[in-house]
Length: 297
Ligand SMILES: [Fe+2]
Image 1 (tube, rainbow, N blue to C red):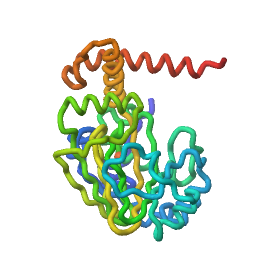
Image 2 (image 1 turned 180 degrees about the vertical axis):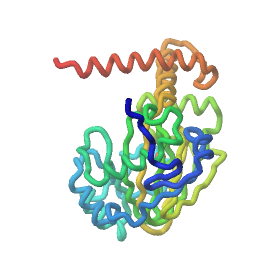
Image 3 (image 1 turned 90 degrees about the vertical axis):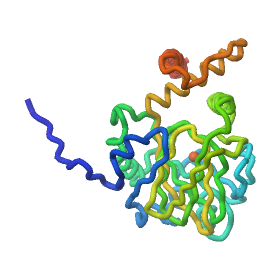
Image 4 (image 1 turned 90 degrees about the horizontal axis):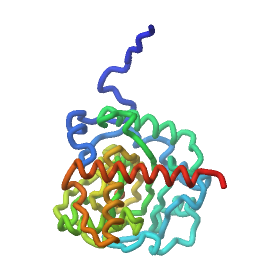
């Protein structure tokens, strides 16, 4: 029988540098900083990103004419620039705007160069994740290009993510909902697909100022917003779902549905056993629906 030997020394990573002990302790529930080596990578110049914007399916690119408010009800309601995404990227040093370029998401063709980079970074993250590669599902990568002074309004994301900052400076403000009841109401609405933005300014804020070469882990469903410094900001964001994120979604969807029948379900997080049961049942239901939708005819 052949013995497989791991020839990569522990701690050697292609692009990321981080404290493994801190990362294992905080991943998924607390923000922490790491470092990366992508600042001078040629795939992240404005020219390369404008070419990427031309290649990508246009319907997958979110873009707008910029924003300075922390609370915005709906990103889709923000004014659009009278430019294509590629034109907006080329003009971003002289006019307000925001462009999100998805490099790895369902429905977007594989992007040579970006895809390999994404896979290398994901491999660098694996050691900090309980369950390793098998615990990583539904991964995605998006590049954000935004003008100086732009603000990404307060919102939540359903997955743990890592924002690798490449150009300009950014301030991440991460907090929590004012009360548990508000959190449960807001997250049930979020999982009903009523929008990622939150109408409330988060409280108990922690601020993280990011310079090029720095990265931040943003835990799932923590309300946050992002303010650019005076210059163009470019970041590469990578996210994925773990079994815990699938379970959380299942519990919130379950609670939202039974509430329609006048029941008062126990909140997510109040009982691990109950959450596992609800999450397991809903995941079975989600999977059955996915199979049904895939069936021809
Ligand atoms: Fe976010």
